[in-house]
Length: 128
Image (cartoon, rainbow, N blue to C red; front, side):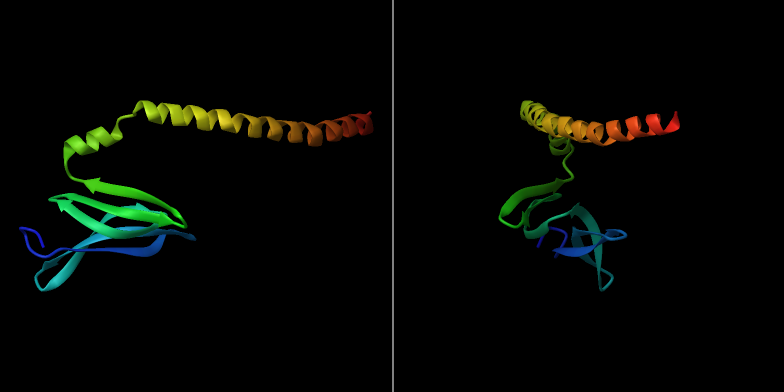
């Protein structure tokens, strides 16, 4: 219950693209005797335990198996601006993720060479 009256928060699994399902968080308010829902957020995990903190701020828990993330949405411009800035931890995580993918790229390159080199040599000898 807020100052404007009752509000209902719910999450629903639905299609966002053909063959791609997601969990969507909605907020519904009564208007002219009907509940009108508005879309708040989309997630690929199960959204549950919605907590309405303040006017325009909602937190919930996204769960996938044993992993959980706290998600939030806000109308407050200061919070939105703060969330959109890159922190030092974002750069460090990006660097480590990039460095972890280098061996996969080298292995992929090696497999491609192993497949392409014999085929290229065979085509070269067959052509002449």
